[in-house]
Image 1 (cartoon, helix red, strand yellow):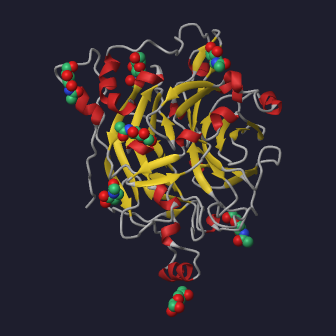
Image 2: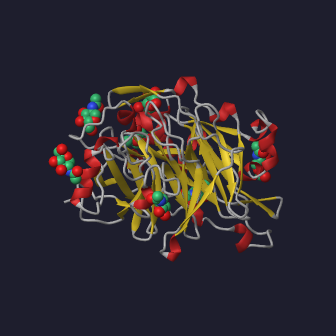
Image 3: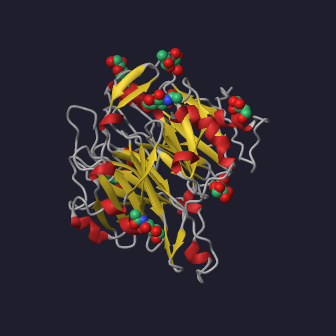
Length: 452
Ligand SMILES: *[C@@H]1O[C@H](CO)[C@@H](O)[C@H](O)[C@H]1NC(C)=O
Ligand SMILES: *[C@@H]1O[C@H](CO)[C@@H](O)[C@H](O)[C@H]1NC(C)=O
Ligand SMILES: *[C@@H]1O[C@H](CO)[C@@H](O)[C@H](O)[C@H]1NC(C)=O
Ligand SMILES: *[C@@H]1O[C@H](CO)[C@@H](O)[C@H](O)[C@H]1NC(C)=O
Ligand SMILES: *[C@@H]1O[C@H](CO)[C@@H](O)[C@H](O)[C@H]1NC(C)=O
Ligand SMILES: *[C@@H]1O[C@H](CO)[C@@H](O)[C@H](O)[C@H]1NC(C)=O
Ligand SMILES: *[C@@H]1O[C@H](CO)[C@@H](O)[C@H](O)[C@H]1NC(C)=O
């Protein structure tokens, strides 16, 4: 039996206030339910003896395995397990989208051997993956393992690994980043979005403690470069404390979450997109035009070059780890200190357009990453990361959950391609900040107490 736990939904409560009905129908959000939960992560082993051998040799230390990233393709959810500590036998795995089990075992992806630690042709440290509109999986492999241990091992280089999922062969194409782009000792490839235009780009957050930035990778010629803006990409002093579930942790973590907005027209014929990002330890959300990131000349110009192009959109009630954009420009994100899942319609001013869609102090303890399937469902990984970094994981309680809600969303990778759909460039309206309507005020009622 699955524990179908219903979570509090503030926005729905506000929408039901008949004495103050919204002028435009506001989209109802189904409640989030827990579909999977684990005390500790386990795997589909080749044999029981294998499991025992891994346990005996500390190659598998159950409480050291944290799930972090999530993605969807076909019948599967892809789940990442970054090797921050020792004893993580697999860094990328799948579980079924639907299963009768509450705590399904992870199936290594592409295979057990492709997850061998210390083999630089295999996956080493995967925090996040993205799957683009052409069925290409883009895997961020940080290379360095044991990032939270006394002696991290930087034997393998930070790389992008591509797999064409359509073929079913799951062959990996590994592209190590050049030394001009990454530092094998400090680079931390955290999250990415893929922009399927003009040769296919990935915009990647590097939350390196010493040199944070956005790494841009172009698939067509495998070129990469890194852009920096200390002010918007570094942790903020006033946002380093995380208070959650009666625990306080101090984490100075730089640029982390990243999201990509829909395409919009510029000057009639050109097309651009907004890239949204935030440091984990920050209350602010920032945006920059994708066209700016794609300008590799800016990479060589040093600190300050990016500053004129960065927009500070305003503050959130709390810190955010992962976030995800849908194809209509709705951004989903967590508010860690508020045990909240929120959304923002990016055409509405950020200050007033944020909505709480779920809030629960027991079930929403550190929202890490989101994904969408092909049926309009949103999935969220909740992993109590604050507990993990404090070495406080107990296998006697639930540590990891996947929540699901039907939101009618699909991934931003399937957003309308303006360059293809309307070559004349004359009729499609530009996406621009619009004046908030009365409909949005219902949302503000729901959020008012969060934002003050
Ligand atoms: C419902 O609307 C009334 C009038 O605007 C307001 O006083 C009340 O606080 C609202 N209730 C909720 C639950 O939002
Ligand atoms: C694991 O260790 C136990 C206790 O030392 C031993 O009995 C067992 O044979 C070992 N299993 C494997 C597969 O090495
Ligand atoms: C290293 O990993 C690659 C990819 O999985 C595999 O083809 C190769 O055989 C492995 N090498 C060793 C020595 O295990
Ligand atoms: C912390 O979380 C656990 C598990 O959800 C719960 O039992 C406990 O009451 C929480 N403690 C506080 C102080 O919120
Ligand atoms: C981003 O692009 C839009 C549309 O071209 C432009 O109006 C805006 O000035 C750009 N923003 C920055 C900060 O360059
Ligand atoms: C939301 O979290 C922040 C800290 O991250 C805290 O200061 C604020 O009081 C919280 N608001 C609510 C309503 O819980
Ligand atoms: C976002 O807001 C705009 C302006 O209010 C509205 O036209 C649009 O339908 C909204 N998008 C969604 C997906 O709700």
